[in-house]
Image 1 (cartoon, rainbow, N blue to C red):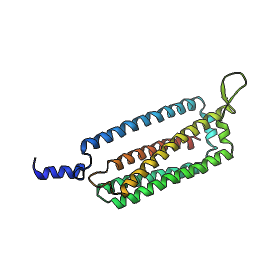
Image 2: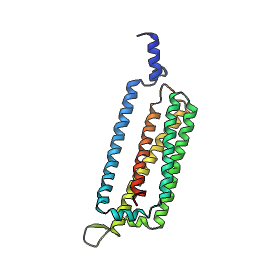
Image 3: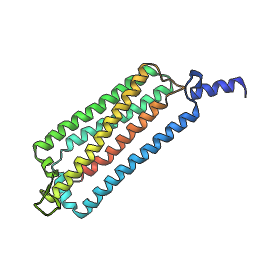
Image 4: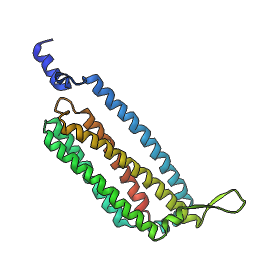
Amino acid sequence: MSTSTVTNKKLHDGSKWGNPGPMVYDMSKFGMWLFLGTEILLFAMLFTGYAIYYMKMPEDFHNSAKALSTTFGTINTIILIFSSFTVAWAIECIKKNKVKMMNILLVITILCGVAFLVNKYFEYAHEVHIGNLKLANMQWLGGTGRAVAESAVPSMFFFIYFVLTGIHGLHIIIGLGLLTWVLVKGIKGHFHSGWYTPVEIGGLYWHLVDLIWIYLFPLLYLVA
């Protein structure tokens, strides 16, 4: 193998700077894809539960969903779509060794995630104020040992609503932690055009979080 070939290989896989080579790069991405697969299975089961109850009581789901604010949902959808664009741009920037621009875009992405959570907080506060959280509470009828809702149909819809959005919100928080870690590493100069695997992995996770919300939005907010 010629010297130029070896040099080009090192420039490509990052080993010139003492970073892991292509095998670690491939295994890292493979591991993340496996993890994302388990996350997809989790939400697939949740969506299946939603579909089962929706088929049993479609009209009641429609009526219950009318109590949700589509404004809150639309704002959060726009925020996450924009953040998906910024994190993808950040990955393209580090591929071209534009570290400073990558860091700026990661900051914007993180701020979008924080904005999503703040908006979700106000939405939850609104739901509590108008009584939708109470509709999600399951009450035990005296001595029967059987859990039923205070108002059976709305309760099931809002129970599913709070479970789905709550789990998704937890994933947003995890994604923010991951992107913050990537940003700190980026500021310290750990990434460059020869080594940016953690940036890609963080971007993959964030894209999954965004994609899940794209499914949640019509199922919860537009079903009415």
